[in-house]
Image (tube, rainbow, N blue to C red; front, side, top):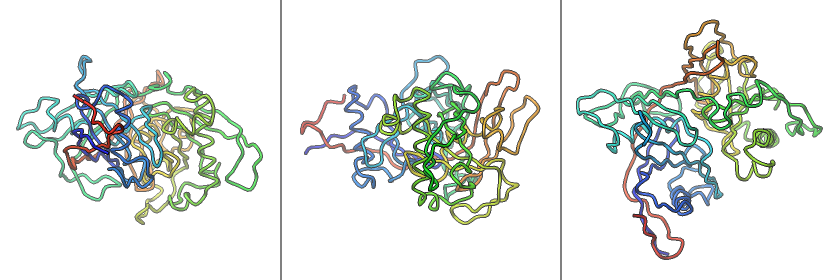
Length: 397
């Protein structure tokens, strides 16, 4: 079978990695685009052995960038979550980690003007998946996105240059409301985390901000939130319960018609996490995190598996939820505010603690912005070879 090529760049952003494409380099045929994304990552094999993915949800990603026609916006950003051993091509969510790399790509590909002696550039980005504005503060060196620096972020071994990502008015991107089902709700589902399979009323909060996230208390799964990922991964029934809850909420929100569709076609949203109050715990590399070092403790799954760290979109969502009265994260978070000022929420996750800045308007109940710090690195660029489905290379001009 012959192959054709597509220009592609690989970036790491935060703790994610993805294939970056310029809109003009992709075919107009959306089915052919899906083919390029799937074969580029190697989604048909869970190992991603036949592509450039990394056998995890945070490395099975693609991004499409184009100049924006919107006023006061530089570029449009479309995110694609790809499958692990299946043909999933999901454009319903977004990736907060790769947002830093989106800013770097815009600079490196000369999609925004910079001068050689500029120290930084604010790239204004529109998320086409979620319909909100991003402001990405990109550090520069000699007119290029800077990579090396002194900033150390959890989940990445090397220090790097600090990127600041801000999301403006991030609530309600998929449903139109930050709390489409109210601050808390209940559902009945068989409790598969124990020997009993009788229906159990489970309290949850569904927060639609950046990406829609479902939150339950860790105790629902007979967990305390400090467990290592490998321990939770052995709790097959607990993972199954998490997916059942996620799928049921997807139906309630209108993301899917039934649980089957939610599990087969709506794997990326909503995402689900369990939360707990601050506790002393060990990170995945054995570092001790003190109870006093974080305000809330959490773990999440992505595409049915435990997430190695925690999705940035989820960190931003959870930090905001911690300030929204009535939600489960609000009830478990140790930090409370009484004034209308931006506040930092410290989130404990498997690889450490992340600080998120939230600007929440207590008077209107609206989240004005959320932001965090990341690093990014351009890894390689060139021609991506894609097997031709028909034996005849398509014209992708």
